[in-house]
Amino acid sequence: MGDFFQTIINNITNVYNTVVNYVTNVYNTYVTSVTNVFRTVWEYVTNVYETVNNYITRVYETVNHYVSNTYNTVVNNITQVIGSTIEDIENWWQPKAASLNAWMEGVIADFDTWKDNLWVDIGIWWQTELGKLNETFGWILLFRDSITDFFGDPLEWLRIRFTDWFLGPEE
Image 1: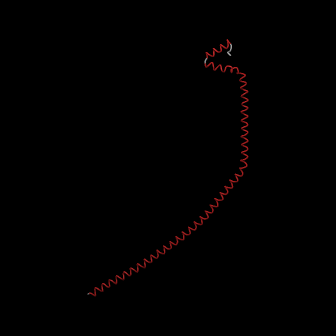
Image 2: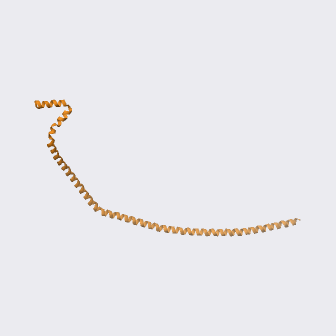
Image 3: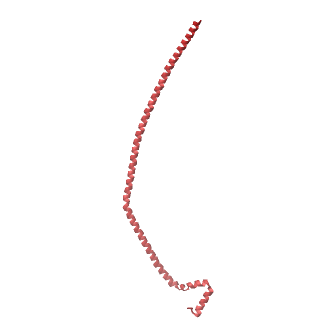
């Protein structure tokens, strides 16, 4: 009976080993195949990514180079045009500013002369009109101080006047 069990155990072991070898072969074949497919797909995707990335980088660098050069050229040209325009305006304005300055100085000098003459004319007119007033109302000046004295002390003013009128002025 020992051999019988041994044969059964050997058969079971052989079947087991056959199944394990078959499963191992199938596993290795399919897993390796699937792994190889994934590896191939991954390498392909990586290659496409790197190619597209390199292409985009080159396009970006090229566009950036041309845009930067164009921008720098445009800005430099605009700056140059503005600078030369300002210089041209300054060169155009310089003689006109000197003429305008001389003209304004002349206007101011003429105004000062006119103003001085006006004050002189007003002074002459005032003296003339004041003379006319003095001719007409000059007799009031005789009483100017008397009016002030009257309002300061009316009785004393009357006493002095009566004395001057009746006895003559004091010397």
